[in-house]
Every structure is written in structure tokens, then in C-alpha cells.
Image 1 (cartoon, rainbow, N blue to C red):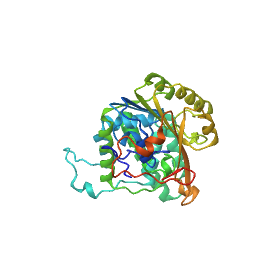
Image 2: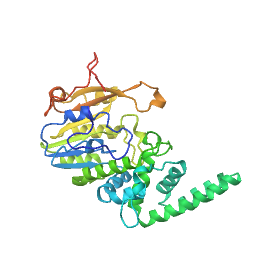
Image 3: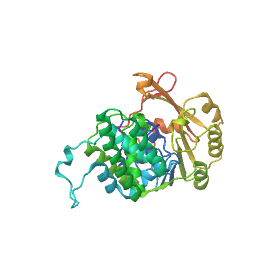
Image 4: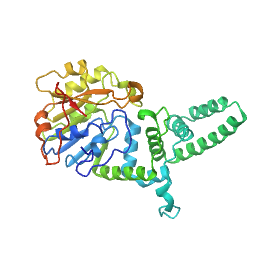
Length: 347
């Protein structure tokens, strides 16, 4: 089933726990005709970019760097794309050879983006990183290369100082796009056509034009927007995997309980996606919660081996089983994903 629904597009960045694979299921479970859609843990924007859901849509995430990227994408997409790809000539025209270019992904580029992104808030910290890089060089070739690398770091640092929002967004994209499993820490070569990046970012920017972007605590936002005409989708950090999400306070067990207690009192239609584990199953044990279990390919194949499955659970306070079976706007071309003997959807 195509992941691009109702004029939707691909999400602009890869993200840990991204929901692109689950979209064929999640889209079928959207309640009919909500007036407001709130996505409390927006992440890479897969659900937001999958297509229009309600007249008023709110994307939220607690990660301020991620939200800054989405806001720059929304309002300054041309500048973001140009700084990433060098698309335009000095007179504003598009370079003729652009279609042949590939996104430059090298370890040096990743090191530069990483050092400026993670260490530029403090001059002392930034230059401490430069000193560490200099001390590592041993051979003549390594010293020459390190001198060049340091000069590039300083140039990038100065650019970031003049426009921190834009350059944080540029470096954030590089770190997400070029790291293993979108961790932003370990470099992994991923050659991508520059035209593909420009297309994805342009389409996502258009999708975000009428989206309200927030950077608030999920509980505060849920309580503020809760109403009978609101649909709230929650994709919190998965239980016992919370430490994978950098740049935000740890979403610990007490926060999982607080989220449950808040959603349990909601008037809104509520949908959640979680890892399928005994703790979450017991936390959402009230009769009001309906559950569908899903198995999908495990994206961390290097760790788990090819063919490994990851088990997830979708929870809602409304009838999602009938929605999944019959949908609200089913067509002749809609196909249900297969289920195993245990009633688990297999993606």
C-alpha cells in the first residue's frame, strides 16, 4: 500500500522510531472527520506528511532542535536546500548540472556538522574540540588534513554564529541523514541523489505550510486541546528505549504513567503506538482501550539480523478494529495487510 495518502509526501528526515512503515495501518485508524488533529510526539513527521487529517493540525515535539528544523523547513526551505546542495547560481537561477549532483556525504562533512551542532553554544567547548582533533594527528598527512578540517570548522562556526536557526537546521539534517539509524552520532555512508533531497524537502515544506508547529510538553498540550472534535495521535518514546532520544529529558516510567492518566480522562479520540510489552499492555488495561497488535521488519537489521521482526501495539479509546476492517473511505484498491493466526497484522 502506498505511504503517500491524500496528497501526502515522504517525511523530510529519517528519525528513530519513524512511522513510515506503520502508515498503511495508522491511516486506516483515523476517526472520521476530526476538526483538529494534534500530534504530540511529531518526530520525523511521517504522520503529518502522510496527508491532510483535519482542518486544524498541530505538530509538536519536545526536541527543540528538531522543531527548529521543521520551522526552518516551513519558512525558509529555499535557503535550507541551497545551503545543503548548492542548487542556485549567484543570480538565483538553478545550476544546469544540478540534476547530476549527489548529496556530498563524507566523514569530514559529518565531523564538521557534528562539532558545530553539538559544541557551538560555548566558545570554550568548541575550541576544546578543535584542540582534541589537533592532538589526535600524528603523521604529516594527518596533520595537514587536520589543519584543513579545523579551518572548515571555524568557517562553519562563523556561519552558524550569524544565523543559528538556519545553520542548526542544515547541520541537523546532515546528522540525521548521514548517521546510522538516524542517531545523529555514528557516521554511515548513504549516497543520495541531490534532486531527491530537494524534492523531498520541497514537498514536506509545502505540507507544513498550514501546520501549527509547537515545542511544548505533551501533557500541557493534550490538556489544552482536548475536546470531542479533536483527534490526538501519540507516538511516545518506546518503553525501555527512551535513552535513544537525545536532546530531551528522559521520558521515564513516571512520564509514561502521567501520559496514560491524562489520556484516560480525554474527551478526544486518542490513538497511541507503542512497543508491544507487558508493562504497556497492563498500563492501558481499562475497558475503554482497544488494541491491535502489529509485527514489522526490524529496521536495526545489523543488530538483529535479516528477517527479524519488531512487535508493536496500537491502542485507542474508540473502535479501531472496525475502522481497520472497513475504513471510512475504502476504495476498490484498498488492501488489508495480512494477519497471522494470533490476529497480529504483519507488515
